[in-house]
Image 1 (cartoon, helix red, strand yellow):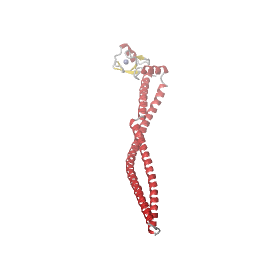
Image 2: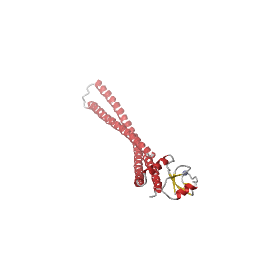
Image 3: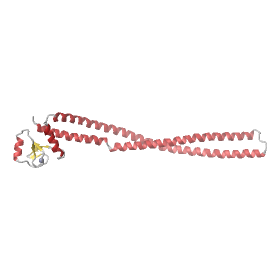
Image 4: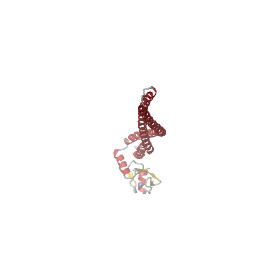
Length: 236
Ligand SMILES: [Zn+2]
């Protein structure tokens, strides 16, 4: 069996596998994906903060509405005294009028606070809506990019499986020491341990080979021959 062409194919497959593994690793750490993920987290944080602020405003509004009711009840009580004929002297009348003025003042303050809270609530709701829209867009982009990346990884994985299967099949066919030799040379020669002879030259370093070496190679015997210049395995 001619082992050299097998060895050459094994080398192609090893390099293909290396590239595929790198492509998978690169796809997994896609920088756009990382950026979208961090933006999404940022938007979610902002939305949670808006929700907390809005809840706090609503609580204050409820509190103020209760205070307003209590104030109205006090005003009604004093006004009733004024009109039910129970006031018997001028001093008492003055006291009631003073209380009414105080309550009216308090009521105005509460109403102002309620108005201010309503304005704050509106502003916050507008901001929240804007962030929610950005978050939605970001989430959709993230979903589609995640799908795209997953699809790509699946394609690479599929190719890798094919590559591994062929590698397993071929490495079982060549003598172990040949495979080890290929790996050893490839390691110190940028992944290229075996080259085809082209026009009398080594296909890797492109230096002319001696006539005697070419003659040996031409015989087509399955023996390990190495380039006199770069030391890689060579074959026709
Ligand atoms: Zn060479």
